[in-house]
Length: 324
Image 1 (cartoon, rainbow, N blue to C red):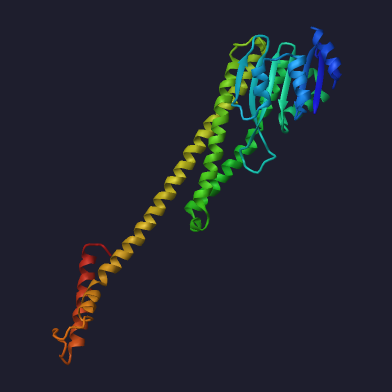
Image 2 (cartoon, helix red, strand yellow):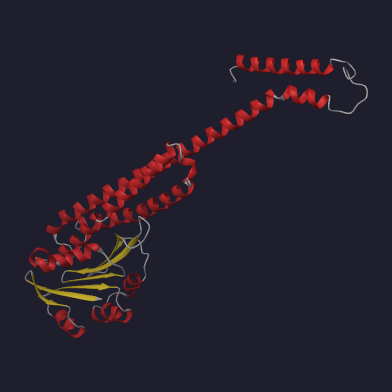
């Protein structure tokens, strides 16, 4: 899907134009243009990126290939920006989808292969209140980034709930019935993915917010700084998530180790207590002809008594040592 909007003096003057009309718009310096490429046909995408705008081949390659880290590259007349939005179409909590942007003073090109909520939100606002968002394409970029960061909150809340549920299972009585290590692994993977994305994303927005690029008007810098602050808080929360999960893992391992030691301690005590019985039973279980008390009428009672007394003395001694 290819959607386009043409702005003049803060008002929409054209929508969803064909390629020939877009070429004419490009020649008019008094107009601003936003083209949104949503999972487009590769041939049409290349026609727009290569022929209409003549972007750098490396920027086009990065745009068409997914799994790029968040970044901003300055190509002189335009910026190439890579950001990541939360992808709600997948099963895991923190899966993200890439959105690429080409930003110049008079145009904005966005490219994404999956649905991005902030893009749909901005388009809806444009349709309802165009002057609010169409004063400049850098303002549209701000609105896209602001919506992108806000959409992290539901996923963050879900991730918080998953960590809390895992802690409840660990400190509860039924924790051993679930595959705790698998849950830990899944949560760690999601948190690492979050930190892997949010950190570079914060750095990217920081560069946009400090006046480094001429494509961002000075009046928009405080707005980009606000987005940077939100990403900074997300990064701190992701760091806290990581520490929280590792603390819970330490508790789980310590508890498992404690319970294992208790089992070993019990088995060791049982082995020690039964030592007299095993000793005398093994001795008199040997098939030797000449053995003490073998032909004594009360030999069984004597040996049993010695065994019981030895066991009792051993138990008393262990209690005195506070091993029982």
